[in-house]
Image 1: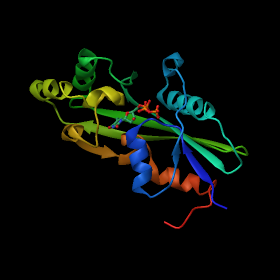
Image 2: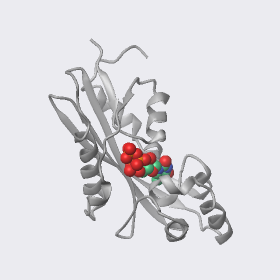
Image 3: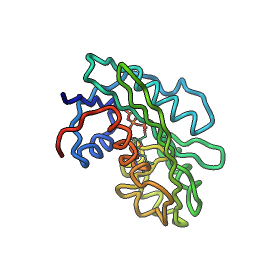
Length: 191
Ligand SMILES: Cc1cn([C@H]2C[C@H](O)[C@@H](COP(=O)(O)OP(=O)(O)OP(=O)(O)O)O2)c(=O)[nH]c1=O
């Protein structure tokens, strides 16, 4: 009997990444206030926020499995979530320019029987960026719904000199690890 995957996320990137690996899902968005979480340790923070999201979605029957995630950028003991305005986006990207930062994604997978939490980290190195390209970037709408104020999967790819670890983890879901863990919960349909 097939299970039903419930994606507890409004992130179009997360929805896209699951479609990419042909895993069927239904979106059920949790109403949570992430700003209440004041944890400063990035690993802890993404685990706690993913749990908060995963636990705020109703599991309606035994077949349902909930998937939730949270992504942040960490740099020199600072945490960069989504910039609220141009100034914040400029400050974040300027700080990351020419340096290596970490992107953490916390993932929760849960059913009525069990709950699994894990965190993936990817190191991302930016080229030394010119002020003009940063100014041009923050005038687009791209930075404002993304942790760290950039999207590695789109225009932000121009900033990236190299990465160490899972690329999809930066986008918002470490898909290959998620699939391994989902196999412990779901009976997969044929792809
Ligand atoms: C670093 C980085 C983040 N992101 C996105 C992934 C997430 O959508 C977002 C981080 O914010 P999140 O709070 O993790 O996710 P969200 O608010 O978009 O959606 P939800 O909470 O409903 O799951 O940043 C990119 O798309 N590309 C990137 O390179």
